Amino acid sequence: MLPDHILVAAAIPVAANRPRSGGMAAGPVRRGLAALVAAVVGIGAFVACGGDGSADGASAGDASTAVAGGPPSGSGVAATAGGGWHGTVPGVAVPRPSFVLTDTAGHRFDFARATAGRATLLFFGYTHCPDVCPTTMADLAAARQVAGPVTAARVTVVFVTTDPARDTPAVLRHWLAQFDAGFIGLTGTPAQIDAAQRAVGVPVALADPATRASAGTGTGDDRPAYLVGHASQVLGIGPDDRIRVRYFADTTVAEYVADLPRLVAAL
Image (cartoon, rainbow, N blue to C red; front, side, top):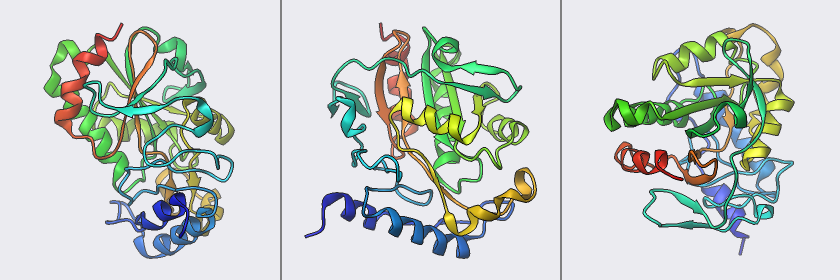
């Protein structure tokens, strides 16, 4: 019998369900990403765009990461469902993550300080993602709109790119504005972004090795197509500067709407 983490990884679809407008080639990327999943099957589960987004993945440097929606196994956090939230709830108090990146205006962005005392939704992804990232951002934008202007004004949404080579500040700003002009976009060096993911307690993203090597040519949308496997969870942080809940790709707009008033009132 194979270990559970191998079974989870083997069950995750690795093909993009549809090409991204602008040239995301599904064929070569599908084969390359399949090789990537095969390479990491021995060290942990891996979620790639095109998957169901219901489980966390693990990078080559993060083999201890738990699967099936839990936090890293070394974090000491017992993740549980319930408590009235529509997501996974930490079993112990976890503070707002601390990391420093750069916003789309080129300014230094100290996440813990810039969002302190505010309800915050944090997500790691990339603009060329064919499914999970755009649908998640669309769901968060819709939820803030449905929840109403008073609640929306008290919720900060932060999107951190896991693909800084293609997601230039201009590309990131334009992409986020299609969902909500108020969304904050962050980027940085690969090392800075990796450090941010570790600070948050999500697996470090992995690019498809079959095409990643050629990404040094061109700029922005001119760079070659490839997929990036990344965590699919949205981190919900309360104004008390504690992580309250982690949402996954199957969370509905209605569930976000139900939770937002509770998140902004979490003290």
